[in-house]
Image 1 (cartoon, rainbow, N blue to C red):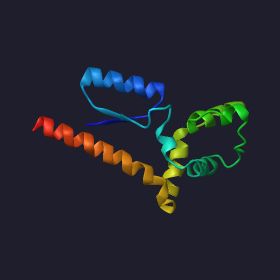
Image 2: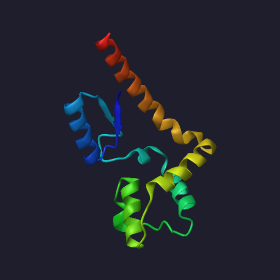
Image 3: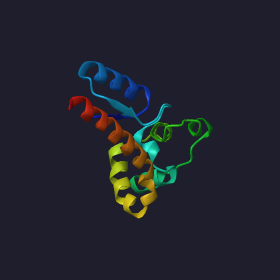
Length: 127
């Protein structure tokens, strides 16, 4: 088993704890603060947001535009508009548009390659 986590502080902290407690290797989305959603092209992820919330205008203000994680940027936008964001609803829309946008999964090829590399080292070590 290999844990794949967001590269934000919470993901890093969880990964370190799980590695310490259970000796499970982990891989983070990135060294900087990021989430799995950041691996998708921004226009594809925002398209899924619009499909989930057709009435919302994605008009990020200056401070929101500075937030690098797309989910945190959207959470601030929703908060400013007095709305609650449901990441699972957005994900449901995202999986429906991925087949029409095959380039959106390209970043995951590198991740799976890294996971396979880690897995092969584990397999060798346990053989």
